[in-house]
Length: 340
Length: 285
Ligand SMILES: Cc1ncc(C[n+]2csc(CCOP(=O)(O)OP(=O)(O)O)c2C)c(N)n1
Ligand SMILES: [Mg+2]
Image 1 (cartoon, rainbow over the protein chains, first blue to last red):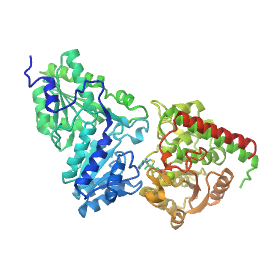
Image 2 (tube, each protein chain N blue to C red; image 1 turned 45 degrees about the vertical axis):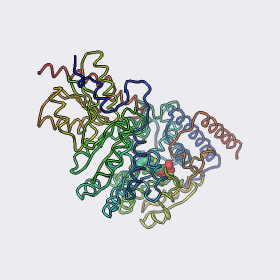
Image 3 (cartoon, protein in one colour; image 1 turned 180 degrees about the vertical axis):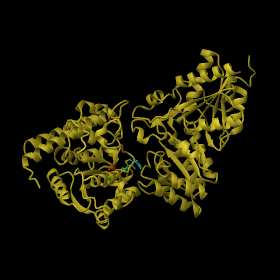
Image 4 (cartoon, chains in turn brown, yellow; image 1 turned 135 degrees about the horizontal axis):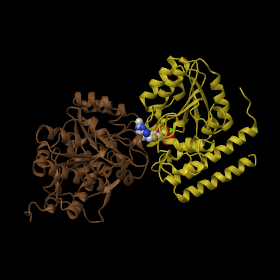
């Protein structure tokens, strides 16, 4: 019998999660959290600007445009201009949030991001929409699955990937106040909402959403939900108790939480809607290799491009569904037992 | 210059009607995708595949073929429908548009479907590749022609103008750009989002040959394209004025149809209108 603190649900209660096992969770795209957060950030501080490159509706900047027309700028299909102009606006005291699809910003504008936002240290905030294969039918050209990798290697850059729409809104508000270049990644498709207004959120502070001592599932973005479901099923089916960590800040990553997960659980599974190469999981591996080596299994896209399809179909096909996470978790656990 | 008979023009107009019907069918089956641009470029793509291009649907990788690049990849449904209607693949395959495993990806991919020449969707990259192809052809004394279809909003991309500059530097007479000048983009009218006018003058200032025509008038477009082909000492651009959503009354001129498909009922209505148009063409109107 585990202690009350170690009860899987205790973490969820402490984090004020809704019962994520319930079948009728609200489904809201994370981009809606972007839109709501920006309207509020713009009311709190009139220097907050929203700038769009011809995608105001789908990035959910439309509401901001209506609420704060004087703080809104439209610049057309010009993503490099988006970053460079925002650098100029930031230099004279504005706090620009710049929006396009992640594939185009930072995808197309990466050198401007590196030089003008990071090397030059300006207070520009990127809203990276339509990230991941869950973009769906638009296909590979529009599915950003390398963006975490190219952003986390830039010095000074903050990189945040929230787990649901409610958390995305909190992240927008927090990043608006945190001085410095930032990248917020979010998605297009509806996804379950399981955090609440009361769930804490601090940039750089990972969150334990489920307790467990056998293996740790470290996830970010909308796949945190799949991680929780996988952990619950594993407990029932295999008696494996997995800790589930919402590792929403890729940079600066909460190294203590990662090391603690490795120490307490002895094996790690990373889960992200991104290439396995260079993403959140790679950062976890870098941290553990230097501190507390442990077996790691990576769940993500395996060095391939996406394609057209339904979001759910693509998540399954590219190996990021609940079953894939369970299989990876069993592998990690077996490796720990074999070496331990 | 060849002379285009009235009968041939009518034949092509009927083909354009087939292409439009194929666009509607594929979009409603896909349940997502872009309507306005594909419909307004149906006449241009029909003129290209049905008259202007040197190509062989049975041998899409024939090295001497003219190259047709679609820079604004989101209007792929028109290219797919034209390709199907001119024999590149069965028309039924249009119903796989945007579905898992299909060759007809939401944005065209060369590796899956070589006849599209290049992968596109991210705007503003087509003309630069066309410049490369035209330059390569010139270096090897090949006489194929390079056609690049671009949207108007792509002219907000810096790279596109880098390509315009480069095309002029190398005096690429074997390169023709066609602009889908429909005055719309996602967030509204191009002139409100980011003004492009005077667009033709900009190309003139960059040392291109500029031609303008109604891109929804089959005979006028072909006649203009043939004039462009006579220019050998510099690249040419055809500013083809089109009506967004052309052929489907409730989409015409409405930017909100940029990126959505018709639902089942709207598709029925659209096909009904297009069928009526077909009968008018057959009646010689
Ligand atoms: C580099 C880049 N930025 C943004 C987009 C998203 N996008 C797709 S189409 C489009 C603009 C639509 O206007 P236009 O190109 O004129 O096409 P039309 O609506 O007339 O078909 C945008 C911004 C993109 N595909 N590529
Ligand atoms: Mg347009």
